[in-house]
Image 1 (tube, helix red, strand yellow):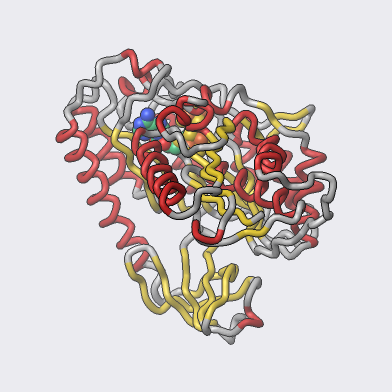
Image 2 (image 1 turned 90 degrees about the horizontal axis):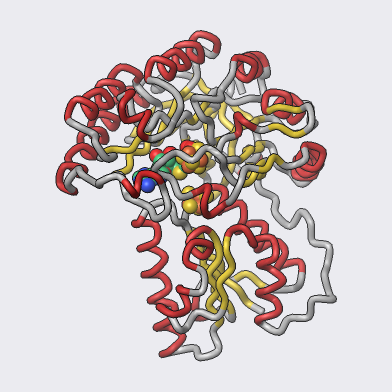
Length: 423
Ligand code: SAH
Ligand code: SF4
Ligand code: F3S
């Protein structure tokens, strides 16, 4: 069976798609790159904003059309968060869809897909380690219990569960054996990880003890749960990268309260100051929402001012989009679309300006980067702060921590040469 997986959404979904693909491969399925070559196309969906669902619908429209016109036998499978939310309603809208499997049932998706395609499930090959990627993602917890008032994730991913750290550590060790140098620990709020007597800071410490792992990253953090113990581990453990993604959402206390975020802007700012004091080269990135119900000009101005004051290393800004069954969906969506667009553009403009300034500050400096990809004489690498760097080099430098002299900066990318003196 030839399959193709298309993934929309967050890194959790990317991780799920990888795991699903891994199981399919182990049963002898073959990964292909085009609809024309595949027997089953699997769409892993996101439900977090209406736009993400729109993207899934247009993909399904195209796949269905292809099935009708060119390939009658094509199986179309929809998995993930939107599949969880809409269930078989998806089949009503797109009659070409054969199977819908929600995010909560993702672990059973591979077997269901093999069944659908008439594959023999008795012939499993142990194919662990078929991936030799430098950076590997690992899910350390599922679901979310935070119920931010705008967010659909708790509804589609279910209640928060921390996975057994013994299992996580075993997986990480296996990834390291297979060549991984960097581990990204994933959860909707990793700061509330707790299994037995092991909290997140303790887990990070344990991962840092694994031989072969040179860098550790994690996301996402929640300002209400980020504690001093973790900041201490980040500051003292050299394997932990100097980057933190810490979604702020808004800098207006009125809006933060309505969002059920359970912190104030002062608390957020205090965290930023603490992080910068303990980890001087840290890059802090964030998520923001504009146009939340009741966001007035002064609330928006507070957020814009915060962007100017904090100078984030990067930010994602979203226009508020009401989601079914969330608390905020019951509030009047009272900021007009045009106004949401204006606020969105204003935040982006400011943040792009700051990003450009930060990035140009790298030029002339020597940075330690991990090379994650090699193609045609160019190594693709990342600084410890998470910035992408393109480096002239050869294949022997792939998968290594090397020092690079940064020569040029363009929007969000850096360009440099290997620093042979310090390399
Ligand atoms: N658990 C993570 C990620 C949640 S989804 C966290 O708490 O940060 C990623 C981002 O999408 C959120 O941080 C938020 O900024 C945005 N988002 C979530 N729901 C949204 C909605 N209904 N409208 C607009 N943006 C939303
Ligand atoms: Fe959504 Fe909030 Fe949970 Fe993040 S922490 S997934 S924004 S409910
Ligand atoms: Fe991720 Fe989207 Fe689901 S952000 S958890 S894929 S709703």
